[in-house]
Image (cartoon, rainbow, N blue to C red; front, side, top):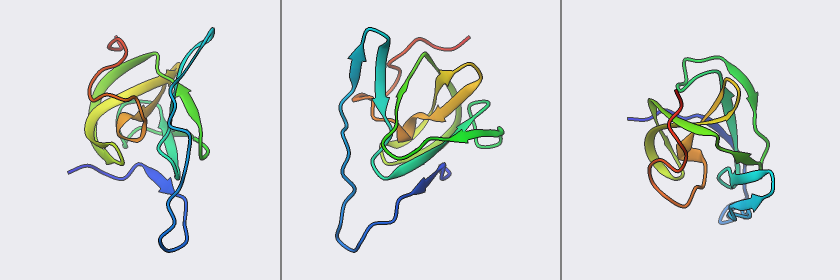
Length: 110
């Protein structure tokens, strides 16, 4: 069973959070949206036992440089053991990132 790795934005009864789930590709690279209504922890490694570096704000889009297996986490996009490297020594649980696919979408991290 996965663990929670986020803070969810409160919404009124019956209201759904809306967000742009478009994957952006620009000259500086591809950026993937975090699930609508979630603030996601960025950690130093691929698991919840790693130190939190920062928390991504609502509506954030992130680059994914490589992916690494780690702790299994359940999020709005299912349960996965994939963790996305978004900067040097910074990982987020892939279950909270809209990539449009299950599984690897970037090279495996060394």
